[in-house]
Amino acid sequence: MPSQLVCSSNGGARKADGVVDLIGAHRHAMAKVESLGKRLMQAEEAEAALIGPQLDAVMADEAVVRRQAAMAPVADVCELKMKAVYFERLMNNGWCDVDCDDLHELLRSFVDLPI
Picture (cartoon, rainbow, N blue to C red):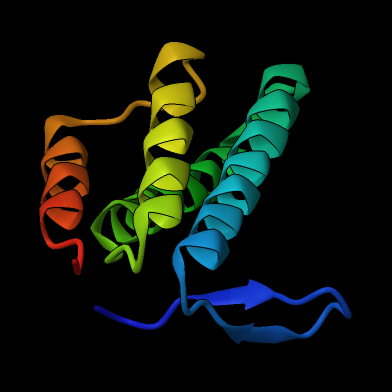
């Protein structure tokens, strides 16, 4: 799995190394999608033509980060619960489309919980 960079508290980029970081990176990606989506809805025709491809790229990045968060191995029961609650919120609140492959990888990550 390729490394994902996330912003640290001081604004610098660092490697996402755990469930918490990947969930944070996904939330950041969703915020980008939402921001560009709002701009697209309010844009005039010429500006919308420029924003459209950017939005497509940001949505693709969000999907990649979502898959990485789903695939991330859990270290303990606490991380398992955190991932379960996060993906439950994604699905129940309609924040983004979680496809069946994401759910499959999410469940697979729970099976591999070290005992």
